Length: 166
Image 1 (cartoon, one colour):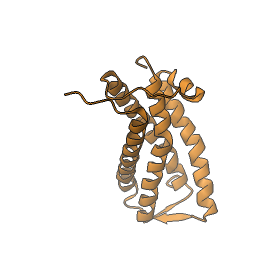
Image 2 (cartoon, rainbow, N blue to C red):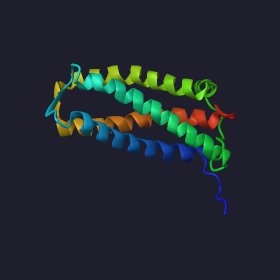
Image 3 (cartoon, one colour):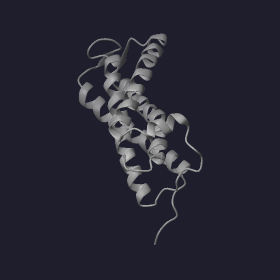
Image 4 (cartoon, rainbow, N blue to C red):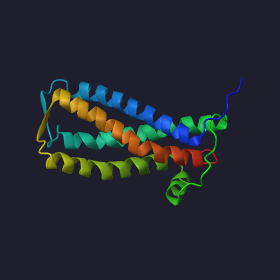
């Protein structure tokens, strides 16, 4: 029994929420793995929050983008997702025209360059010099979910726009 294809907008919302939850779980795992013996994590320094944000944003975006792009491609081929009704923006069309490896790296770099400095500035403005372990873990989980919420819709829209395997 075949089901009707999921409308593209519903698919984007569902996959974005799922990606946020997965990112939060990954952040929990790596925060616990890497910082479990650290009672407080400073904002600055080689073991600091600021430095940790760079691979966090880059890797979550890179691997999340790759995974959702491949899954979306497969689901489109299977007819499980209805093509988007609206024409994509020129930004999404340009992103969709890139080969998948380039698309994922570009989005990961853009997210890292945009989010890490803004986050560090926000933490400095809030006078956050250090975080105890559990507040740091909570911060990482919320932050990872936000990274997913910001990046997944772009990638999903681009993946839905691609007409050939890329």
